[in-house]
Every structure is written in C-alpha cells, then in structure tokens.
Length: 228
Image 1 (cartoon, rainbow, N blue to C red):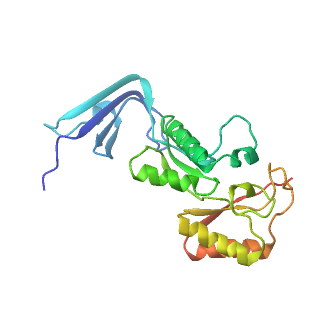
Image 2: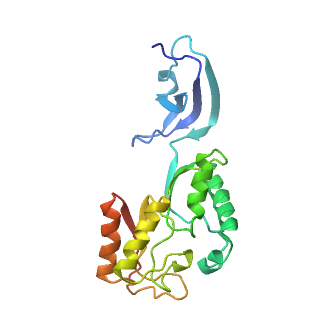
Image 3: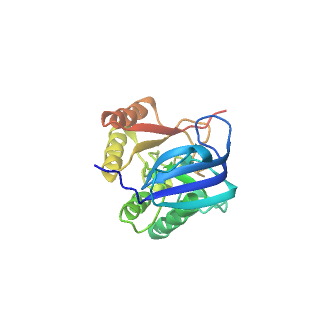
C-alpha cells in the first residue's frame, strides 16, 4: 500500500522542546501526518517525503513543545475564591457549562490531558460525552466523577457520602458504572466547612473496601490526605 502524500503539515518554530530531556532545539520543526507526529528535531533534519503536498506553518518567534498534562483539576470551579459548598449548590447544568469553559481554556493554554479530581454528580461525564460526540473540543480527560467522602466530610457536597464498608463498596461500583477511570477518596478533612482537616475521615475497613473494589476491576485510587 502506498503512503498517502497529501496530508503532511510542517510546523517550524524558533525553539523546539521535544520532551526527551535534552536542551531546547533552536530552529526546530515538527512534521505531522494526519493526527500523528512522524518527525521532530532540527529544521534541516525534518524533511517531508519527496513530492509530498505539505502545508507549512512558520513561527520564528515561538516555542513548540508537547502538550502539557495537568494531574489535579476541578473543572466545576470558577477560580474566584468561592467555597466548594457554594459551587456545589449551583445546578448541574451550570456546572457542566462551567466545566466546558474551563476545559476549553485548558486546551487553548497548551494543556492536552487532564486528570479531574472531583466534580458534582455526572457533570464531567456529561462533558466527556459531549466531547466524544464532537459538540466541544476538550483535552483528554481522566475522570473520577464524585469523590468518595464521609457524611460531612471533605467534598461530600459533590454527591457521594458513605458510612461503612458496604456503602463504600456500593459507591465504587456505582462510579465505575457511570464511567469513572479511577476512584478519588477523601481520606481526611479539608477545606469543607463541616470537615476536620487533620483527622481521618474513614476507618481502615472502609478504606480497604474502597480500594479493594476499585482494584478488583483494574481501577486505581487517589486520595486527598491532609497532615501536620
């Protein structure tokens, strides 16, 4: 099968950071075919196939680098200092739209992958579905849905408060059903007004139940944990 020769893009930049750990490359270039990077390096070394139709983008005063990854986001937030309880009091529809706004801002800031660390109800799952349908462009998203919290515990206002191993196990199963990529645990209090920041929220049996149920289906866990 002959390689298609009509969909190459050549991106030239004053500086290229290739993500391999070496120094920045002056007069760098990236060659893209379709959605795949096929070459990156010094401009003189990045040469499209002979006879290829190439669209060239030249950014002499700019830096080209791999997409950034933000491993801790809360896309329901407004970034204006309001408390989580006040954010959670807003309708899910508003929070989904706010999440879409934040995701777009991330993407156009060079963040191409995010790990969301807790959102209300199904808001982030709805956003991901909209992205899959082509309604909106977002970064790649690794989602946990609602954090697993205790009654009155940190981030319990987002919708999943549990007591005891049985409820904890059921909560994990529900989150997995909804599409969670991993499980977020609020193991201590935090900024939530009704929580106790430096005290454990769950006992050992509850934590074991959460992690066991997640690991049983190949999912990892992440934990909010304040300490002295």
